[in-house]
Image 1 (cartoon, one colour):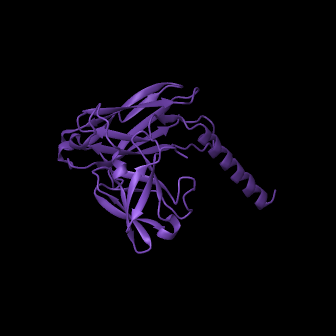
Image 2 (cartoon, rainbow, N blue to C red):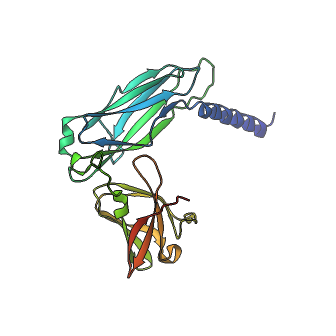
Image 3 (cartoon, rainbow, N blue to C red):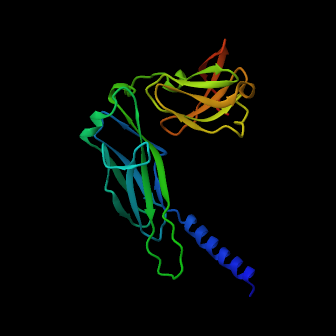
Length: 251
């Protein structure tokens, strides 16, 4: 067998094993983001083992905005648990007294991590991959949390755009983080290839990354809400200042 053939077969075997492991991605989380409201002592998340034949370990932890692992002001309980085949369970994010030291006039950003650990294989030369889910975790102080039972305009509608030369600047006057995943000149057009989704911090501004020529006079931004939905906002610009209104019919 030639060196080329041996290399090709070895690479094919490695890719086959990797694909098999990827297809067995087991431990799933019930949400794409976590909101920890200041009035609560903890938040419970549902996890499940989608593999009906093998047990998995589920390991959870929290990172701060700098991607550093932390055990305060919140902690994951239990940090590791076993999930039987096809079983479901819960993991709790427990608040600690240090939460009171966080800013109480705006959200704070953390990340919740969930790693699945497969059982040790009894087959030789087997590549195993521990897959990991990482979602945003927002601490939302009670003072700014929406009131239960009260219908309020989504805070994302308070976003504004401002012309800065040939570009648009996004202004977030709210105390909330806002994630923008699409930007287009109208509701029927896809985002330009050069657009990069971003998250804008509370009470801050940043460049949208697209020119006014690309977006025109009525830009449309798509954001992600608390439930993973993707509402759209259409902006109307007058003298370089643009205000938002919701798009009723989602594309």
